[in-house]
Image 1: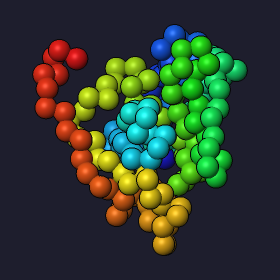
Image 2: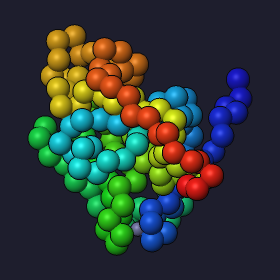
Image 3: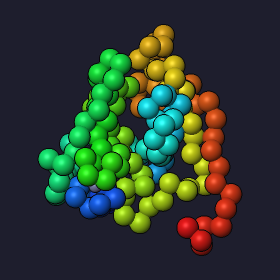
Image 4: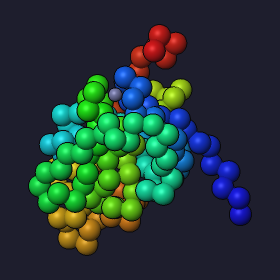
Length: 151
Ligand SMILES: [Zn+2]
């Protein structure tokens, strides 16, 4: 079967880093997370398989940050500092992609589920959520109630 998923164009803020990506399930996977890293950066992430991202420029401008177990790899532009994507600890075959970096997208979508990243799935009994469903990991929902025409 042909892969008919849309191709999204992505970039950092300064434009040094450019990529294209196909998402696993469009915005259905949009999530925020309560871990120490995600809380600080405040980005909404969507899911993509590692093979479905292609860097068209600036891959050498990316810096990578790791902490804790070092499994998750958090990439950001070394010029403008914007987080573009990270390789997941919960599912290392996937990237989380910064939704705000995708052309025509906004992080101010109606509802974004919040995941319990503080208690990481890898550290939980049975590895809840490591299958990519996030089942049992949602601790809440962020809602945007503003005027979308002014975004
Ligand atoms: Zn940049």
